[in-house]
Image (cartoon, rainbow, N blue to C red; front, side, top):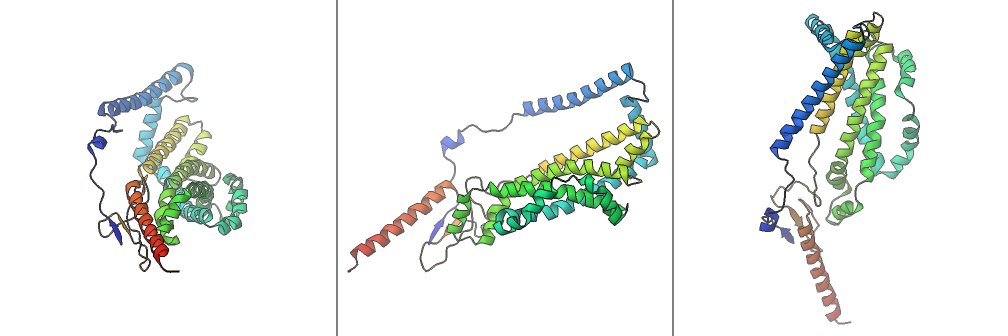
Length: 328
């Protein structure tokens, strides 16, 4: 049985290698540019709205801010925001919870992909708004119909991205795990799932944007509350300041949701190979004795893989020597 010890300390040459750390000055400058860009847009908005339009057609930022403060104090804006976010969050989470496992199964098992792929390819080209009228007829104008529309919007984006992530897994990683004794279930949880997580999160970010767009369309047609209803109802009274409040809220909360999904990005489970939790503190435990079962609990890096292959060659050479010296 061969047991690899923990990783050796870095050599002086590796310590002298340049790092990709970003200087603090660049971070501060980027932040300043970011804030200045937003302030510049607000100033352009103010100049254009006050110079070329009447407030009824293009409200200036100060008017929108004043109206928004009044709506916040009365509680009306919080009501619209909370209802829309509840619908988006419910539909988005349900759709992602269905799509991610389905995408993993369809990407990993060919027969499952063969069964469901025609339906996925058919329905993903049917826009969610096309189902709005049938869903309202079937489930009424309550919360169920709006959540189902968002679920439909979310499923296909996350599912397709998950399938693409599974297809991009290098076959050698799966072969390495199998050679080191990993069962198909362990290979799924320690290779397929970690490698697919970035694709799943990318699909969720794209689906989040579509969820915001879908809930606005649904609330414009069949709702009596929400940001979509606020925008649609305000147009009847030419209350453009309230329309802009709804637009700003949608953009701000959508941007916050996208940033939250970016921050959730997982660390790669294998940077140079395969990484699994090692209960004994070591990074690799591999048995080459024929009477012992191969085990793999840890991280397989290039130096360790070279050691494993060298040990395997030595055992193979011993076996060939034994066969050549044995009597016929």
